[in-house]
Length: 84
Image (cartoon, rainbow, N blue to C red):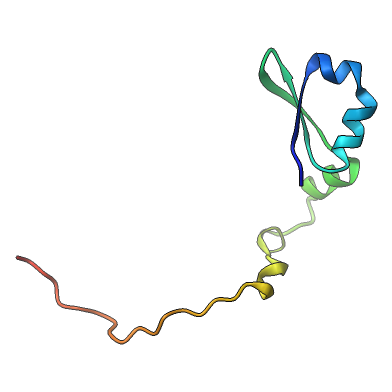
């Protein structure tokens, strides 16, 4: 996902270009150097505003199956406190 930043003037001069950029990620529109608006595709907007999604679905990581994780073996669960 690519985030594009345009000034208000750039946005006004090339609205079609901003719409094309929104197909690849959010377009941040800055007013006097400060972000003021974000342009998204309608599909992305619906995905972000879906009231049917549960927190579990929103935090799910379907790509987690591809992550290799081998935790180290723990030989001792606790150790004596060092108070010295």
